[in-house]
Length: 284
Ligand code: AMP
Image 1 (cartoon, rainbow, N blue to C red):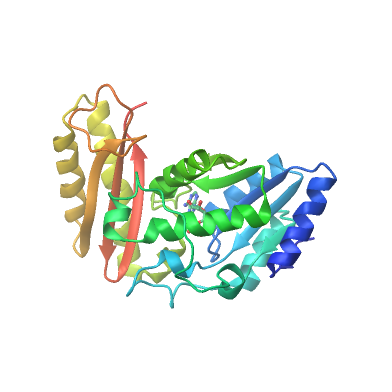
Image 2: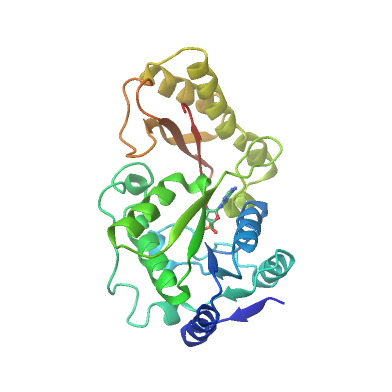
């Protein structure tokens, strides 16, 4: 049976109790509006832990002014049902006041490297909000393992660095991106798309596949691969590219050549008011 927990005091009590009984704790942080991508993480967490915990919290500090905080989909009853089906023991869904008792501008965590480029450049303050809330949630839930999707690749690197730098006793595990049949990465934001935009949104994945095929076909000039990403994305009317980058998969530094270092392509694009991101590894 899945139990909904809304207060810090109760989640602390429940996780401390489990820990006292020698149970291992797995944790999946989410913002809710759960889809099959989240479910894959929930299943992995369930399989690998004695106590499986998910959180549902639309974190105000990771949204910039003018972003979609207010209209972000909130679907708690459906989310709880999904967690129940996945065998999750506890769903921690606190209020903002519970996690930010002194207001949103209080003490924060910042991961300075890795956060100035890509999503960090387009969304100033975003990763500060992410790092801060994940740290708070880790302190509340005390997980042995926490699960993150590769769909938010830069976020995954930021969390790994946060854990390393602050010596947090948590093992970060990642899960491959779960996709729709046409390749579109599942996202809570996909529900903003009109039918026409939804049809066009498949071009993000298509562009990444074109880039990977070019690399497999022997193209090693990163600028040529960037060009392929841009051309493919821009071939779809109404798709506005935010960035299309080829970077070192560990440091996110832009690459010149795709030979020595592990390379990843990362894209962000807007369809109307909806901003979507995706990525794909280009070399092993
Ligand atoms: P969110 O609710 O968007 O904050 O996402 C919660 C977690 O689910 C994050 O670790 C995401 O990377 C992960 N996630 C979201 N969409 C997908 C997807 N399509 N495939 C795999 N993981 C995902």
